[in-house]
Length: 153
Image (cartoon, rainbow, N blue to C red; front, side, top):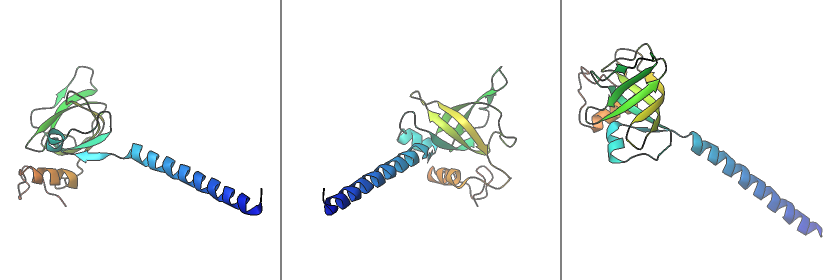
């Protein structure tokens, strides 16, 4: 093998390794990517089965139900247009309550029931996650005074 052939072989091997490393990195990013959906978005376009997503909206009034085991909670998340049933097994944040903004992370089942792995509640009286506020605005249910929907910052 001549010197020129060795150089070309080494260059091709280096490019092959670089391409493999790039593919692995992109695959890792793809697996950890979590998209945000509102209940209306889910009704219009169902996300892929088994893929982790974030669902945001308001906890629907009179929808919170605590099961007998003490850890499982069922409630509905709404954008004041559509609602999605959610179940969560764990301890809820102290600020979780009906009528308040919430973002839940988990998976949507084939039956349309959302199983949450994590529940994130708003942190003060006049903050709502920007994604939730935008989803409520798109649904045409936003109230500028913030009385029902809160105010986005």
